[in-house]
Length: 377
Image (cartoon, rainbow, N blue to C red; front, side, top):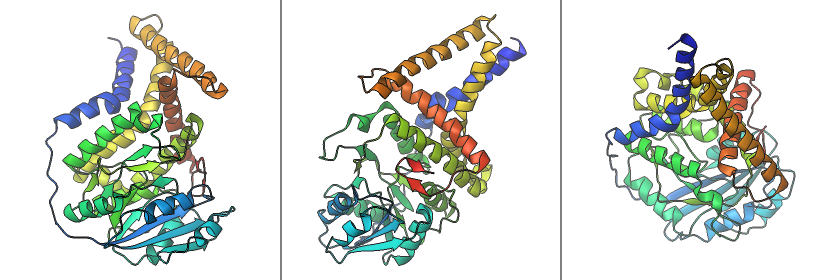
């Protein structure tokens, strides 16, 4: 095998590793039981940072107030990050003493969260977004689990629902099932290193998010791991997300998550070394190599175009070209609003383009924590 073929094979292996080999490795690794503390928890501060959320914020708060709260001490802290709509007005219209609104000037989500945590009076913090909805028993179940397990964070899975509560097709996508499988195995081995935006954390674990470029949830996860506390993915305690997204908004969000994720991970460089243990293995496999797999695939495609005189190069170029063409057709169907049977390849290609753009955003330092509904700017 010549040098170009070896390099092409290596690029394809690096591309396939986080998608195929890493999940298989996780399934074979021994699982470690989580130590128990069995403490009854009754106090909870719910933290919601909001920007222009007049469409969702009232329903979000009502889903909390309509939960089973008997015997619990609860407060709901909403921080408006310079909202230009009626978000603050709508929250103020909710006449309940446990609901508190803080109208901050535009400063970014991370600074808003930092200020809300300082305002909170309880030791247990639950972070949710305005488009999340809780089931009536979610809070009690989450507190019971958090009191039972000796962990620093519990991550809640997110399921897509329509505003009237009906199940949405996006809720059980192939990719979400794949990610849930990885999160579950990581948390059973050591600690999950990937969040979904909603999690409960001990106040003494939380640390101020010092940069606008960091992903807030990933920052808390890595802080917990750094402090020696496991991060557990509670697959049974789902929270619903009602905001309907599309491929193009998901693409923008993917850019933000990768750019912010890289900034966050490299702020915890010590977790990437051998001394980081399982967390280092998870971060390299689930995060860094996964995000850079798109770069490996791009380089593999470019290299294969110079190897069309070989079966290996021709097959690689042909396969990737077909994927691009199918995705382009899916893009046209999606853009036109027609039935789209090609959503899976379109999602795959858009996701990888988002990874590359996110890496570029990180390298150019162009991401920050001032958000729009399409993600952070």
